[in-house]
Image 1 (cartoon, rainbow, N blue to C red):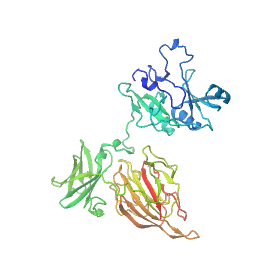
Image 2: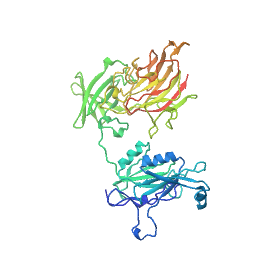
Image 3: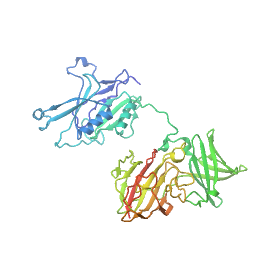
Image 4: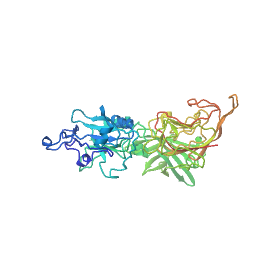
Length: 507
């Protein structure tokens, strides 16, 4: 780390909007230890102390204490009260008494103190804090931290996310060895955390990836390929299996859902690997080979002659982005998780697996969209597993089954009841859709079942189950069969699966 103080622009405006003073903080020239800013002639100063404390009126003292203690790292010390008559006479309030909570940054007499107070029954308005330039006056609090990694860990544990793209290294003309992370307190005030750049952690190649930018080189090879030989369409799936290894499946008449007739006896299968940067394939029966050349899948016959070239394609479901019809209940649109029990949402507005709808339903039509992680080293049920449960009872499997047979425990399967008519699973890291028409099981007055549940399912716009009878609840379902309505349940199976655009229409 360079032995230079915190840049002036980061220490000069160190107050949160709505607070009454500023604290100037910087990284000392001795390294990353925390110190209070003092002028060069501090010893000759006419001030009794060179420490500036802060006072801040908050809307919810509990939330603010939790933020500054748990997320930022302040320590609480004994507070004090200010009587109403004194507060009025000195001009602090219009007559309200003050109960002041004191938080301290560091130790000793020179430690900065943050004084938080809430005035119940007194109307106060929030500052305009969209940006630091939204209004004049002090705009932010700057705190120097010894470890950005530790600070980020505290924030994460407290459920506080950085604003925008932080942490970011400071520009070259300031101190690029330092990183800036900005967060907001419960009232929206800016708090800057400045410290050493986060330590880069080694990438785990076997970890689930949700961002294509974080995926390995095999991801750019994996996918669907399509082309034409003579007058016949052909398609191929290339499935990454880790360490530069692949499986390949060829389809006559086109890809699943785009021409292939579903006859698995008429498939072309093989395996591939990466050697010296080149990906090549050999068929299981020795009649053909293939290679990736300039992003295309080039196929050769058993004599080595080139006879086909297929382009890599990225298909989208025709049902992606389907709008909720009139009268539908919108369960999730990316704005909040109010419709879900213990629902959690990502910063970019996606619903995280492992939640159930608060409302319950009988017969319904439902639309949902899901996004599977990239896990090339995983196999079977560990490869991006979740599940959609109608009424919390009957599961349609959600799984990365790209290139698999299409069984009842794979993507689109009605678990333990029926295989999908066709495996319509797209490669991972592509949005996919389910559209479901569900009829609940029927029961008489004594609670005896008189009719089984039935379900029609479209996967990526293709019917994979047509009015299928379901005679039992899924083994792992939260609810047993019964006459009561049930929720929409999105299973957590230890894999990061994301959902969006979920709506349901009662029938």
